[in-house]
Length: 307
Image (cartoon, rainbow, N blue to C red; front, top):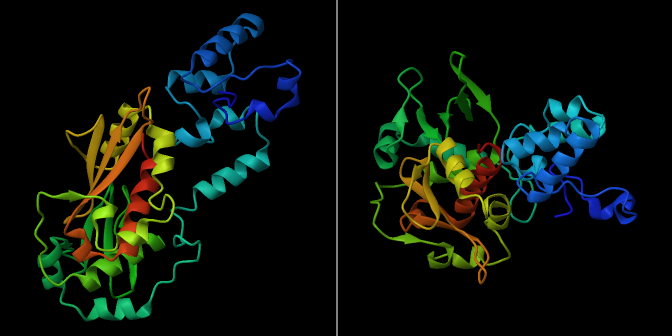
């Protein structure tokens, strides 16, 4: 546990090797509590960053705290310089990645917008149970904890921003490509069954075989020993709790497309694991790349916006 709550890895610091200094440890560790007590005794006060992480039950600020970098970093000389913090802030405000699994930029096809613009809005609403906005006549739906409008006139997605009137244009490539794929592909009301499946059970299972394509490793690193935080993050994104595993919830990015997240805590014999499951009908509504896009979005917001 050489990495402190602030994100500094003391293993790569010569001061630690020379035993001039020791690691503070993750915020929830006994090491952090001991270090905070020593700081209070010697300095008269603990490190504001470490104490904040301890009180808020956060292991690592850069990974686990949605408010990073906060004033505890910007008003202190330790541990980062202003340039690093500005880079962190800039990249964290960029939104979800706009690349496919191979790292290539996602390109939005005009042809897909052409197809969508030619479809009957009422028919699509019946097939998907997505509402029609009374003012614009466009499809609108709740995407996790956001409200999204599919503006076919301007060929873009818009979001209802709290405290503001009307809709504002957003650019989230993964969401746009998922919406276009779904609304140009759906041709009936796909019934939801009682069979939950993983990627191994899908017809295009081979698409998900390479590495950790659904990036469950990042979710495990963040929530593998934190079922309460896992459940709270799901709730923050309007997820519904499910009675499975040690913690579980159901996200609904589209009204008829549920995605299930299940967490099992580790033991002496097995490490923690997370399962991501779907209703079997998803393979009729979405291609494998679109399923990947939708899960990647949900994962991003679970890691970025979860409380």
